[in-house]
Image 1: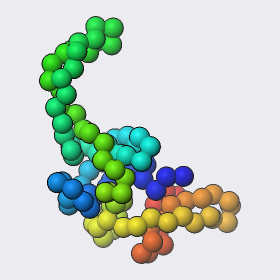
Image 2: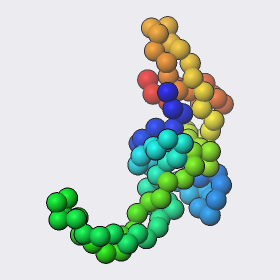
Image 3: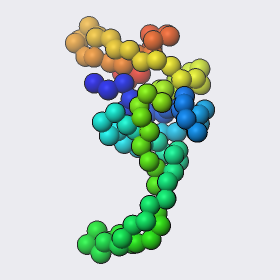
Amino acid sequence: MNRIRKGDQVILIAGKNKGQKGEVLRVIGDRVAVQNINLVKRHTKPNPQANQPGGIIEREAPIHISNVMLLNPATGKGERVGFKVLEDGRKVRVFRSSGEAIDA
């Protein structure tokens, strides 16, 4: 079970975009792509089969997972994540500071 998942709100704690917040678009191994963060321009060939135009396309490049922290909506700050097993046997993510469950 990953500490950071697709759809989570995160804050960057290192790098050129430090302090910016965004939503995780995809998790690729030990890297995450965050919406509107670390944008790069790629020269792309057109692909008619996928109905994809060619040209210079701006998209999010992945960032190492150690450079992002899960955003706690209650405090508005980045918080560390731990795990807890509930009475019914489910394993859930919790904020280390408050012990509050992230996904119920």
